[in-house]
Image: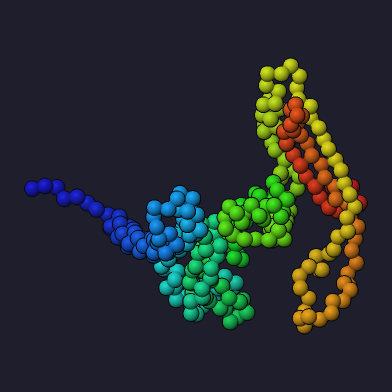
Length: 287
């Protein structure tokens, strides 16, 4: 008589969940293949035509797969009937499902989650948003990180154009500017400065095989620019097509001061650190 194999209940449940998930993923993939076939009826097309069709539909596939995985992994949150208010701790009953679509680097992800509202004055909340780690707003953190990376290396208009070409997510240069400033809020030059070890590595890299150490250059420049207060941002209430009125706020001339450290390596420069800030004379002097 052979020995019986012991199988854990959790392993059986996990296997069953994954099998159901795989079935739904296959169904989602079949739906995407239908769209691909409609756009590329002749599979004997040139490579450029094939890659263009797949590239155009890529977000439909990857976003849809992500959406299916999220729906399976958080079934308990979707069917949740009660939740504790994060403000006062009261037990709140779920309201009908509320849909939300967020943009990620792999495409749009549509989620439906229960909405809770505390009548004690704390307002509404969706526990599933926290369970998924959703960021407020439509653009999620992976998209914002990619936008910030481009905006710190390229002019805003160029960064917006390149970002649209690489991701298919059209954003304006103004959105790039706003998001970059939000991400940099509170940062100081010490937060972005490379470490001593990183600087030593750069110096050693440039000095390799040479008798003299590389030349370190500090460039500093500034210019006075007009600025507007934060209270001037955003739309003002009033009827559309109404004659514009002169702004009630007064601008202030501030100095935009920038600095850059770099190494000279023949005809090229090796970047070490750059920083700029816009302040009035007193605050800039204190900084």
